[in-house]
Image (cartoon, rainbow, N blue to C red):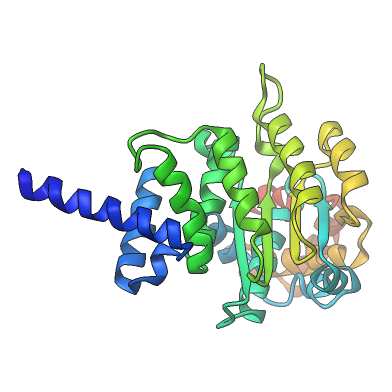
Amino acid sequence: MGDTQQILSNQSTQQRSFHALDIPQAAIDPLAGAELRHRYQTWLNPPDSSTNQNFASDRHHIGTSSWFLEGRVFEEWRKTGSVMWIHGKPGSGKSILCSTIIKELERLHAGERSSTVAYFYFDFRDSKKQAFHGMLASLIVQLSVVSDTLCDVISHMYSAHGDGLRQPGEGALAQCLLDMLSASGQGTRYVILDALDECPHNRVSPPRHKILNFLVQMSSQCPSDLRVCIMSRPEDDIADTLRPLALHRVCLEDESDHALDMEHYIRHEVNTNVRMRKWPEKTRNLVIETLSKNANGMYVVVLARVSER
């Protein structure tokens, strides 16, 4: 027991020395840095949005979303920064587009230590993915693996909470994330948030209200190399906050190329459906035309109609 206490005491002394010298702890030893990051992840225990990313990405059809990735809005947002808000009806493919944006950013900046992509999917099926605390913890942990400097930001918060004996509140987490996003010399940082409307707003001190206020604060305090993308339904409270905040706005229902994506998706679903692909081509084309007219920009309508066949 005495040996264990001595080891912990030595680690604590080393941490204080690193802080005094303003040396990122993770930079002292790469292996120790990996252990620290794992410790911080265990401490904060954030919800895992990679499951949502994989689920949405697996449903992306090759050839769709290219209109957006090759378009003017996406290019300008990447070059000039600020906030981009993409909104659409329920089931209009926002999450699929979000997953495609994330994959494209990761592809464009693969191998670059000067660019960071962090994302969070709100999800009405998971209470931790509806919470302000969950969003903050997830983004913090993702950013902590990017560089020793950002890892050191979370290290200070860890030390301030009894070396992990106490959990941080939302205020401490929010400040930690702001410090990470404001840190100099870290290159371009992307923060992608999907399905903000799935965060509740009808309770006392609703998490969505906190998140919207935080987005305003983040936009005003963080540097020009921050790019934020938010996907949601155009609900009133979200629209009231994001309209003046977002320099780049996209309404999916107004995009003709999005309608072409829908037709491409419908054609694929009809032609690969076990029963429908046996039908004569003329019949299948009629079904495709009918579904395209009645889908009203909503992928869930197509899924429901095809599953009935």
